[in-house]
Every structure is written in structure tokens, then in C-alpha cells.
Length: 241
Image (cartoon, rainbow, N blue to C red; front, side, top):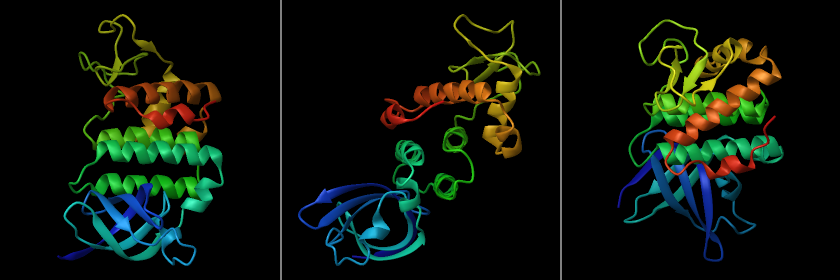
């Protein structure tokens, strides 16, 4: 059977037997891959630490009928330890990994891979606050998946914004004329912040007030749960402001 090589980020691991582990990865060019890593739970294993959650590595696989087998691992981004040592970053990384699992399959998903790796790198280096990294990641991941939110023009009649109501079902803001009952009312500051999170304008994100960040996080959480089937279980463990 053939072998192949790809960059991958570890999403999840499961014990197998006494010394092996099943690893679920998001690769750069092969989508999600489930593979057996043999002997990695032994203390003498040289590659076990490279296949922990949130690690990024260059991996060689031996293609199998049901599960592939990991044969070589070279570390690219050792983010697991730095993330796991910070509870806030750890819970955020779990939401990100679960999101990646739900939004990808066995088809190539290079944009989702690069987005996730960038988010994990930011968490590990403490480039921004964990909750801000998560909100930006979720909006971008959903946009890549085809559910890009609109924080500018009315999603009902296309009237130019800014608008002060957000409707999850229509995927964006609406004007007063198009606003249905139950729409979330948000301030202009929150609208601007959401747009900045989506586009990665970090100066605007970091200058926002705590109240605006909290309101924006609530919108992002609701929007994500609406579009991702069965919701994100790992969100229950988040530390929110």
C-alpha cells in the first residue's frame, strides 16, 4: 500500500490497546485523517509528544483500509504544552479543534488548516486574548465554510449600514424596516468590533470596551451554534467575561 506525507495539526487522540493511540488530524492537503500511532504511549517513544492535541507536524502515513498508520513525525509547531498550561487557552483550543472537525471532512481543506494553525500559534504565543482569538477564528472558519456573516449592509434589503439589529437566521445585520421580532439589538461599537474580528483588524479589536467584547462574543457564540449541527459541546467549558 502507498505512503504519503503531509503537514497536520492534531485535533484529538484516543487510546488504543496498551501502547497505541488513534490520532485524528486535519492535514493541509488530505483533509481529516484518522491514523494509528503505534507505541506512542510508551515512555521510550520518540514521537509521542509530537502527536499530542494542538501540535503541528510533518507526518508520513502508511495508507490502510480503515485507518492509516503514522510512520514518521517531524515537529513544525510545538504549541500543545504552551496551550495546555493555560486553562483559558486550553478551553479555547478545544473549541477551535472541535469546530475544525465539524467543518471539514476527508476532502482537502487547506484554508481551514491554515486558519486553525494560525489560531493555535496565536494562543501559544499569547498574541491576543484567548476569547478574542476564538471569536475571530469562529467567524473566519464559518466564512470559509460558506457562512460568512454580514456586519455592514442590511441582509434583508441591502440598505447601507451601520445597523443595530443582528439576525442569526439571515446571517447578518438588518435595518429597522427589515428587523423581525426577537432580533438581537447591538450597538454600533459591537457591529464595528464584529467586523474587525472577521477581517483581523486587531487594533480595533483590542481598543474595544469589555462590554462590547462580551456582547460580540455572545453574537459569535450564537451564530456558530446555529450553523454547526448539534452545536459545539466544548463551548460549555469556556471562561467568558
